[in-house]
Image (tube, helix red, strand yellow):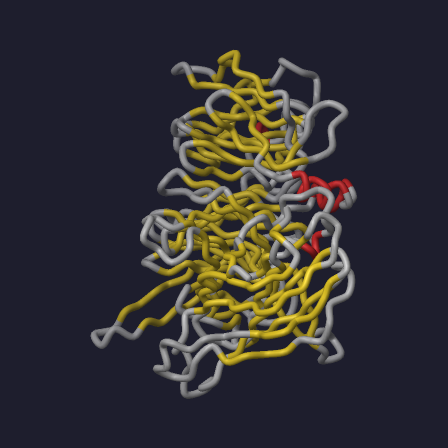
Length: 488
């Protein structure tokens, strides 16, 4: 009876499998960089969050963040703050929010800067300029030309201009390096297709105007923005989903008569980044849920993440491995019961070595760190379901299964961290979990083994879960199986 290695891979890939049969939650895959490594693919625990400061608890949900000239800005509720970070002589760090002004509304905002001015734009609402070096550091844009060609929607900065889309199939630009001055004559349109403008993005000094069914590229010729002739036949379904990565960008969108998917620009082609399984998930969302999605990006521990958060789900793509994982958070509801929600982060801003984040629940501002193993003191539940084990439709028996985790990671608070395992014959219902210790403090060679898991009539699914607040690295998985072989 041979001992076989089971892959820690294949999550969110098969359209025929339910999402519960493919889950990889709060772990992400890392691929071996050396042939001598124990396993070609392992799972590492996603980073936790520590609170650094807060703007309060009542109506302070984060609406966006931005970094300008070494300063981070967060719009929590209607309060715009900058975060002052101070290091004292002993290396202790303090984070202080400084209130800059009030921006009415409760929806997500668009932000861009020119190095001196920060522009905050409320879609179909008002625009604001923040410039602490001027005599009026917080002003509302009152120039009549700002709204002369339609209600402003989203802003980006390009070639010394703030570039803003409107709700009239047009986009406009500011005066050079001055977001308070606009001309009604500095107006442009995307005409390769008559779809409405939904989003804007800049990449490699080019401006991309996203429509509901297409994306068109523009460049600045020294006086006006003109079309380059480059055209993508996939539109943007979620205005806040366009995100730069590796000299390209990703977005949620679709072409004519298509269901939404997640795309990446590769060369001069739109390539689908979402798998068929993820496409199936997206198709279950309403148009409003898709439109309300937003993206974020950051890099940690050699991994480059782009996340897409929907109202009830956060999916994360690692551009190094081209693999997907899911993020969730544990919070208390109004009755004091713990519930699982999509990852609670609403925006991220990297500043002075800290990856700060705004919150979807209140005004706290956190620090996302791979050396933190909880979220604001709440446990992070990590789980995965490996690929089904099959025997061409015949019965299969699992004699032994051994997951290898980084051991000896116990702490004084959690001296005996555990991993939990459950099996399922159908993927719909899992048996009760049983647990094993992955190694007390300093015990680095602990083995975690389950024996005699029983007989499975057609296929076997195995789920592992961990919630102890310690370092988590799932290195490999081995098993002894009778009558079966690994299936896809």
